[in-house]
Image (cartoon, rainbow, N blue to C red):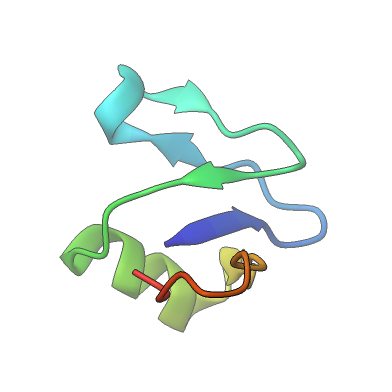
Length: 57
């Protein structure tokens, strides 16, 4: 899933040696850690457009 930090939040990415997430966000696995970050409001899920004819992942 693609997520970006919520306004005013600094979010670390455990999969990348705890580097800070850039404002435009990045692709992350849908796991307990990122589901919790979504629930807490630390990150926002960004819907990415898929090309026509290709199913969404």
